[in-house]
Image (tube, rainbow, N blue to C red; front, side, top):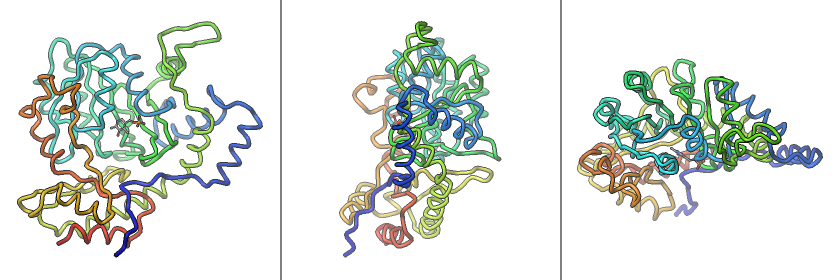
Length: 369
Ligand SMILES: *Cc1c(COP(=O)(O)O)cnc(C)c1O
């Protein structure tokens, strides 16, 4: 029996010798953090690669969420999705904001714009959607609702690195968008993240906020935080940026191979590419219909695990079921039937740039009966 473990993800790592060369430069300069030259260069190159006007680097993908809410002075209630990584909702909580959960669309897993208006109250100030698995939200309809009620939109775009619609980045939607460069993401700086904004003034303010609010040697303009990316991670990020397109192409090949076989498996649903969208293949979720498939999601999940194939149940359990949030009125399961349906049926199959055709075949053989 093949016992090699196949993990759900594998980090994209730069060439060690190339990284060493850049580290030597950092050692020579003795400038190791605080907007150093690699930090500046990575911001410049990322803005170009992502086709966004302005970007500010962070130490992770959670602090840009918290900082965006601070910068926009968002208070009261914010409409968001329970079908995400827990950091989305935590960022609201850390700002003293009450999350209001709205159900998701079964096809995409993204917040259902149809259900947003009914959740708006006089205390609502913003909407925080997530481009789940990198699939673009219905940004046009969300913006229309936001404009009608005077709400801000902040996108958690942690999954959406490099995702375009007809050549236009989805990171320019809403007031701001956040990215995560965590090790498990399509593009990583080990730990890291960023905030994307529309204008120079906002970038300047965000740059102050991530550095305690310092606008100069002695001037503090706002109660900021410390979330600056250091020079080692910026250098690492520059090297990874050069190979991320190749990594996305490898992921695409894996997705094609999965789809080719799974299309014929009764009771297994997956997501197809959307025409006009440049996908990043960050995840490959499948949804198990236990009646049609003849096995529950967990039975399949643990069967795969026993054979050394480590999928992940993203996103299970739902954020709305965690202790902090389950007391909220909007967290009751009757309000979120689609989100529960997805959470109870999903397995994200292994998806990364190093999976071979044989690896994928081995995974598929466990699913095809
Ligand atoms: C990964 C992730 C985050 C948090 O990013 P970190 O870099 O781990 O702090 C936030 N939101 C979503 C949807 C994520 O997947």
